[in-house]
Amino acid sequence: MRRLFIPFIALMGLGVFHLFSACQPSSSSASSAVGDKHPATPEAALSALLKGNQRFLSGQLRHPHQTQQRIHETENAQHPFAVVVTCSDSRVPPEIIFDEGLGDLFVIRTAGNLIGDLELGSIEYAIEHLGAPLVVVLGHTECGAVKAFLEGGECHGHIRQIVEALMQEQEEQQILEHEGKNLTACIEGNVVHGVAQIRQQPMIAEKMAQKQVNVIPMIYDVHSGKVAVLNETAWLEQHAFSITRK
Image (cartoon, rainbow, N blue to C red; front, side, top):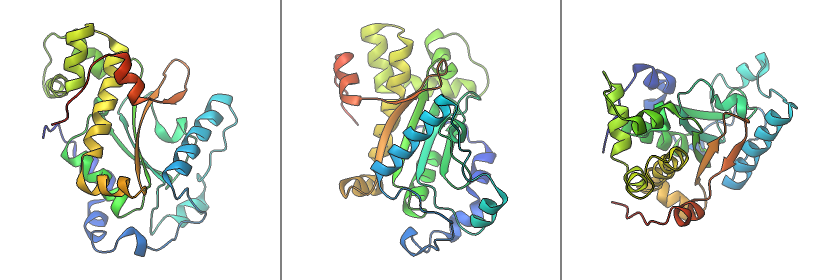
C-alpha cells in the first residue's frame, strides 16, 4: 500500500499513549464520560453533520461544546460521532463548517485527503475503540493537491509523493484517459478512491455489513461553504467507466 509523508504531529494528534492503552477495552466498555448523547447510528451522524453545515451556511451557528464545561466533560474520554478524513487546506476546517466542538469529530487531515497506513489505522481506532458510527471522506473544490497532479511539472521534496500517490489512483488514471484534465472529476474521483480504500478494510467492512458503520463521500465547495454528499453510482455513470478494485 502506498505511503505518503508521515508528519510526527499526526501521531501526536492521536495521543499515542492513549492509543495503545485503548487497545485493551473496546468502545462498548468505555466510560460514557461525555456529557450529552452523540448520534449513535450512521444515519443520525450524517444528519447531524448536514444540519451543522446548514447552520454554518445560514449564519445560525450554535458553536456547541466549546466551553470550559466541555473541556472537563471530555478530559478523561472521547466519543466522537464521526470521523472526518479531509484535506489539510486551511479553508476546510471540519469543526467550523459542520458547527461542532470538542469531542465531536475525529479529524484526520492530509494534503489531498490522501489515505495510507497511518490514516487507516487512525480510522480503525476511532471506529473500534471510540465507537464512531460514521466515516466521511471530505474533498473540496479547488484542491491544490489535485491541481498539482493535473498541472504536472517538477515537484520538489515530499510534494512529489503527493502527486505520485494521485497518479496511482485508478480513478485519476481513467479520468485522464477518457476526459483529460477534468479538475472537478479528478477531485471527486479522489474522494471515491478514498472511500473504497476505507471500505476494503476487514473490520470496517464487517461493521458496515452489520449496519453499525457507514463510509460516505462528501465534497465541500470553497466558493459557497456548502457540503454535499457525493452520489457514487451517479458519478460512475456520469463518467462512463467501471473501476475494478484490486
